[in-house]
Length: 615
Image (tube, rainbow, N blue to C red; front, side):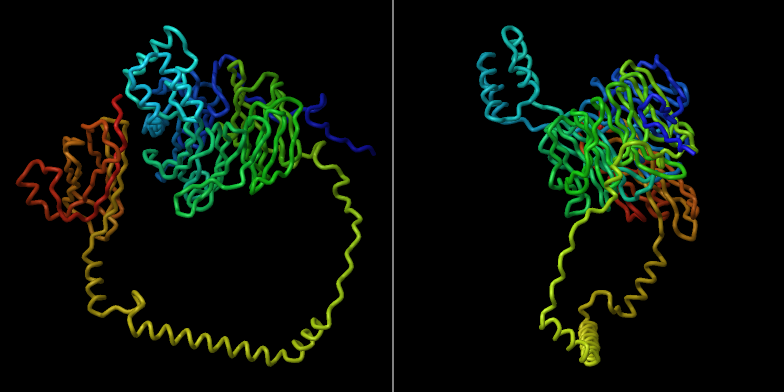
């Protein structure tokens, strides 16, 4: 009986298992591969497609329709979007980060929450002197060109001046001399990495790449920089893997056709560039992390797989040039990692390692693609065509694409062992034979001596430890009985209160949300909460809030309204103090308590305020 062989992917008789769930050719989407992400924006277990459109809008799709549309407060086009969990609160709702110009906008529940601004670029002192000199436009351009030829990094205003001539040059020089010398950095790529746990809904950190060759790792609040790395070239794409506090990797593709690997430094929370680098001969098109490896697509229609220490494992060749590269974590009866490569002819080729497992024919050139859970399906492929259409493909739940076997892969001759002659065994020397015979004859005595030396080492160690205890050189080894009783009484009298604070808003008006919980066994009555700040920097209409009763195990929330008086205030701290209930008499005598008065607080927390923006 003849066996039926499955057709190879790409042949005329082959049919892809992907089902077409939705196709909207009038979606009018304009974005790149970094402008798509799939996220559960409501925390209800249903994935949505978030698109950072080139028109300056954040568009959200759920099911077969567009759910909402949100304008992005930036003059430039958004370049990247990603989702991450910014905190550990329940229910688990991810935040969406959008990079546009020099800013990264963070949305929570599809509402603006916080904005991060990249640090300013340091301008060359010689360039500033040239602009301040009272020279003609032609002389200024000649001086800037000489400085550029010497290898100096010029600002955008100077680079724009080099090719200009005539009246255009004069107008540009006069206009730039009246503008202050400050250049803002621009975000080029964006990604996220898990902070402390390798879980799907674990807290994450944003990883930002800028035009000034910087790679920044932000804290969970997206207001401060946790780690900073200077790259040899400007980054264009970032893919991460691992956990930041344990062991993580960030694969950064740069414009010099190299892929740099960032990892943990010597100190906790630091990052360094790991050597060697991955050097390529042609331009990088896409990058996707695999299982302990990284896949890099180049402009010569090839995909290269590199392992640790930049060792190349294999190369895959495609029939057409590659436009996008993405990773698909296949969920189902068997989990697997697939690498998806979109080609210029509209095909999406899917690889598992070296094997080609599927070819999906779209029929149109693909501008962007994203993989992950969408709606209630876990294996979904969202495609945006060059014409602006939206295509949603879903894989049947019973189809085991991870175990499919098709043509391609290694040849069968690879499993045949080679006939390599074995080396002759070396003859054992007379000294080796004598030592072996000696060990056999004196084995009991050698064992007794080993046991005796082990016991002597244990006795010597115990004596040394006893001497240290008697001299009191070991911290915490002994404590007088009176000190122990005083410590117990202090612990009994201590009131256990938990305090958490979150800053909301972009400024100049902020909401400081404070959550207080009683961790003790007894209820606390008439508990004041005081907000302390610098009067010249901030202003609050009500810096003191009093809680009537704080029951154990029931957290309470209160909100302080805070107005920023100084827009240039950066990294200013405000203090939140939970005061004891003995201040009832003070509260009765005065209606308003000034924020600069200090008391012995039960618990105190300091919050770093973000820089205010005048919106």
